[in-house]
Length: 426
Ligand code: BJ8
Image (cartoon, rainbow, N blue to C red; front, top):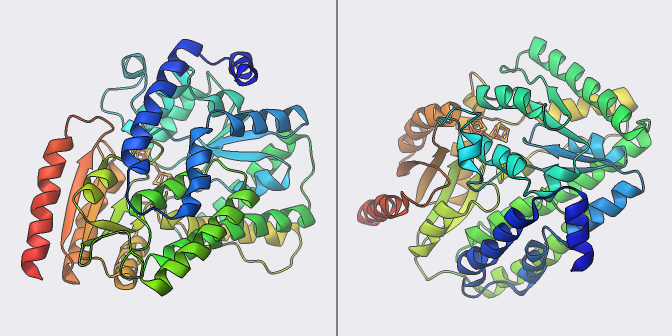
């Protein structure tokens, strides 16, 4: 304990504020995650990981850093982690999922900025995120306007590299993105002091693909009826995927999947017979943003799939593993990342089609579309998603919320009413 406190001090955490954060997190985790019934025994690894998320994992990263490995923070699923790994570094997700130092943040950012951006900036200003403090580089991207302008301010606090993400998927956009991926690789060579080569890059591609395959395997077992794992546990795993060492994470997740596949054979469920199956769609849910899933599952339903960046958008596509030279590998990476269907793209028919496809595969009784307040891309795209989903006869509810708890009872009432409509139509 003393060693880790020493490390926190050394990297510049605000010890008092950080202690305060660590005091509240276990209580929330207990209530939301641990108290669920009939959890798979292999969730123990992920519980343990979470309990040491600011401890053991930070110590690992710090010790690798001493040996020359870079720590790179990312805010978006468009950041190609394969390149970071191939250059001996670690890629960490930095999005914030809780209100931190809001007053300080709002002295700089407008109040009507999306909670995810405000949260991440709050963690930096308050110096309570050890991952942020360890970063040699933060990688941003030109997705939404809020993030773009935030990165300009953030660069006063930490080195930032912004990747220019096109907003269309035409050939000229693909060309721009291929160049951006190469620029990022060159930047990472500088930061790491190492040279990228095809061998290391294809090995990193395999490592990340294996992680995504394991997440896909988890998604696959969630098609079973009755559900063999809760949505909250599944979301937690997706969130941890952005922090853990990828090989270890993949091995532990595959062990969990072995257990879950046995549960499917035996028909051991986590929910009551006939309970509602819900699909989530929308903005990412960063740790510890479990508000909406906790409400939904607290009412007896089970979330069976998340069309989120902490969900299918992160793991559905993989980079081609065909052997190739460095240039070909970089092109394959560029192609895989540009296939992500974030709402910042226009037109974005791909995402609407994917939502319908997932609904067909997971057979939810209803879809709850989640957007963060002041997130125009996702809030506006809700209209097209609703139209498409309802045309397939699936009930749809749009919930717009933030990281506070003030609207929890209102959301509960809306979800309750939604469930009654679904049951009434069955
Ligand atoms: S690929 S979803 S991680 S951009 S919620 S900050 S869009 S105003 S997080 Fe995202 Fe990449 Fe897209 Fe995924 Fe802006 Fe909306 Fe806030 Fe958002």
